[in-house]
Image (cartoon, rainbow, N blue to C red):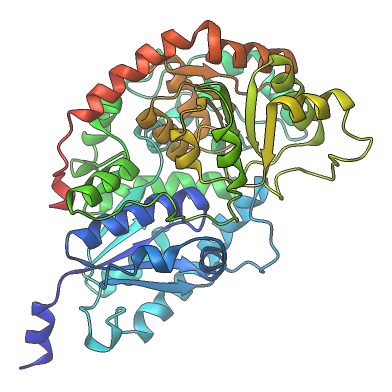
Length: 484
């Protein structure tokens, strides 16, 4: 039998390439496992740095050991190992990948014969890549490999990215002054002006709500240009995958389909994966982590000792950084609210030093935390959100976190920090009406009020909205077009 005949008997081989950030990798791994469950061979391409973090802190190997068709390949992201890869330094990662990723990707594909594993699997049949990795397209086009984009953001955040030129033409991008500090920029009156150049969002989107990549000094900014050009290239792909569901974002999905007809809304992926595993009679273990940090499971024991729905869970995600002043404002607001709180503070999330044992932290915060709070470095988030003691989510409005909160039925307080989060938080508050948007401010009085609102005063209002979206999601079939 010839090699060609042997190859045709093997399953199709899908290459998945996420941006090497926690939220992107989480959803891409969920997609990878769903495709494995459909009998496909899957290779996920990770940066060396990301792979090392997963091997150290996650359960990547044990999670995928039951899927014989799963493989991991790695390339360099071009940054030194000690680069922080958080806060504003994340832009370094995007620019490094754009500069060096193309040659790294070409070398990998050519040296491994399309990741064929010496003939044990087909050469890559299709590439599913993250939305800002278009440097891969010239390579796969030369090799005759079709490709799709998977944007790990919401439809409502993707759409303004796609309409960047229209927003520019309308003069609605709020460029920063050359020497303008962030606080002054946020307080500009023009930030509350409506954006009228994004179809379907004319009555929702303010200038402060468009993705944070727009907050640059001019249109020549490298990161701005990368987002502009790469997003427009989506129309050249075979299709676009979004981790969302029709009932939640149907009006915006309809607008996107006018330009990209092959649009697949297959979310929430974490819930779909859980349902598929149960359908196959396989265990969906909460301990199957894809975390870049060590999870502190002592928080589960702490939650076990708290009353039902009494705790607000606070996490600002994997790349947010806080100044010491912001840390203290949040801390005072949480303590003064009188509610119990579980707060995730990553080891690398505070700019500068702070001490929980020295004189730098006011005694009232220490005492308030000791009586009602728990502060840890990282947690198993889905397990925390599903815990009976958890009553609300104080979040950075990353898309994974937003979907997880909707799926479990928790109202949100949103403090958006970066990228798509500013748009997500606006939709949580003004469109889906399942929480409150606190973006562009960090004040202990506002924090205290919003925590009280989400836990008590307006809780029933937000829970009513969540029930609607949960019912809508429950109507979806598990047999999506892409995965059958």
